[in-house]
Image 1 (tube, rainbow over the protein chains, first blue to last red):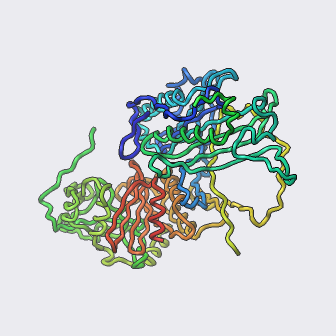
Image 2: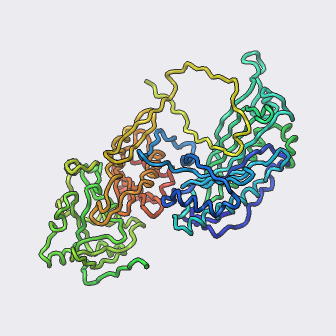
Image 3: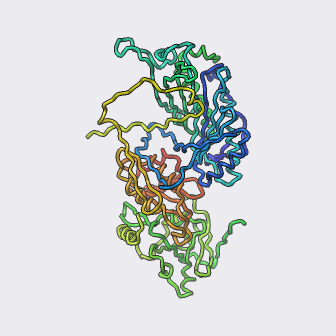
Length: 290
Length: 146
Length: 176
């Protein structure tokens, strides 16, 4: 875990500490349907960080991430408590003629790992390499993130580009639940998800599929608001073979304490929520151990 | 090269008036009194430039001298004692073009230092706080948006 | 006319590596004739004098504080070096953006417009002085944005980081 300064969430880049420990009673699966995981940190914008600096940073990671792409910047996002009114306006200060500030991608050779950087964000994505592959558990994913984010923080310090002050963290698990085990068509919603029961009357009858979006406030151990869990469910078709698939995204975004402490809380909320939202039948298929 | 550190100069008495120009954009409206107040933003510089009144007077200058050619500014004053009470050093820093130049030196980012300097400040030119309408009108004449 | 409920502002996250593996196209047309209850957001563009910048406000309708605030920002975003006669720097545009972002999060429809004050280091400050209270949100060039609050009648003072938008919004409600 990266250690942050007490007062202001300032990351001390050289102090990478021990890897996080898995909570003892957290549900565990040997073969969960996780296809992609994302860890993301948002920090106060580094005004001194220019496009050229991203090139210099890439040269430091190019041996592991040889491919680069440019994309549009992601907007900054801060989770507000439920009683806080949502912003009714968006205000942008735009240059009439200026190149947009890009978000840079640095991709590894197999296309299984990705670093995304922009002036106020550092993101690391992983995906499963193939159907038979094991899901890289959170502890290993977190270790990899800490290593690369620490490297980025050191790059920022070495080049006097400012101070990284973390304002928000984000954990995402993307699940590909493919038909064939436990369910066959998108109408088999209630075989996969515990949150849906098909209507018993003729009206409206059985749903042929379900799309679902929900947000849940996240509370820390002390009961204080810390962030929000976003859950989206979408019926899709797998391109490789046309198989029906449920796409279940769970993203936890928020901040607790200093630095990247929220990652552990967010991951716990995601795992417990995933378990609660899906059926025991599917848990067995996914090899639930705890 | 490390930044300079300025020492307090005891030859500047606590009662000494220190003049500071304030741009019209640093004057804000107090909705309670409907008059103008100086923003604490006018007192945030670590090396806060001022003109030392007695030095100015010795050279034949006055408060009006500070505002010569500065149509977009008003003039306020604090005393050296006001600054020292807030752990600021008051020192002489004569410049070739401005012999009465001095500095109120010290961090002003904590514990409301700039706000306390603002509260202690007195109007010099104009002698009392104008109405916001007057300032707004001056800004418009000078093409400054408010 | 009854106020329409605003839709929730939702920040749905994005993913990258596995989007190419599935097809979301379904024969799933959604037909609606709803006309009076759809929120229509408009983009209001405010050119900033002769500068090469503009302000774009996205909202279903403009809150009362917008025009005055935008005008105040326009007044400072194009200042020259030495604008304050003491070597004052040009105002940092990133700080303009981050202060606007904070404002959008803490202001409500009925909030009073802030004074927008340039700082000599290239930063800026938002201020409110009313109801015997003072609230200042400082965006310095080389430090973390902070806020300072004082209630002149009770003597209560508070300070903290500007990213504490919940606290800031509560203080602004007291002043409104």
